[in-house]
Image (cartoon, rainbow, N blue to C red; front, side, top):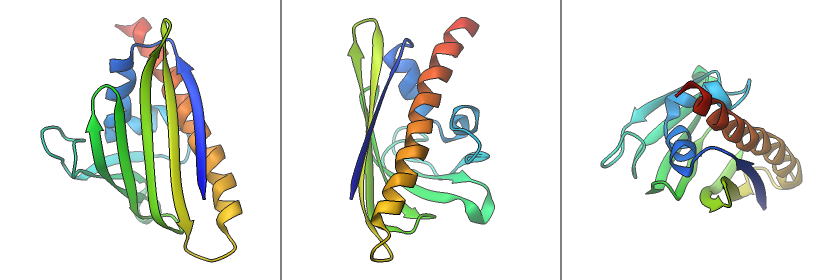
Length: 147
């Protein structure tokens, strides 16, 4: 199963990437499901670099995700280690200049843990990742007014 979500932000690509790559910023832009974001393990060369494990959510209801690609300010990929009823979940967020904006393409694929639930999980992820993508785009724009 797979999904794809796209958004545009008037914020610079570097700002969008910095927010995406910082687990501690997620509660500010990712909506009500992400109450807390933190590093269980920091990565190579940067807190959110390759090998980092981030936790998003709240306590036992959090997901564990390992960063597998870290290419600022263009791309970040992660795999879900726990917290969702899936196997082999891999997502990639690509950022690219799009005129005077930044295009955010968030794609992922997975196998459902329970056979027959893939469609329901895909629908949930489309809503959740859609909210994350739009929230990231809007928050990155609003931070420009603060700086």
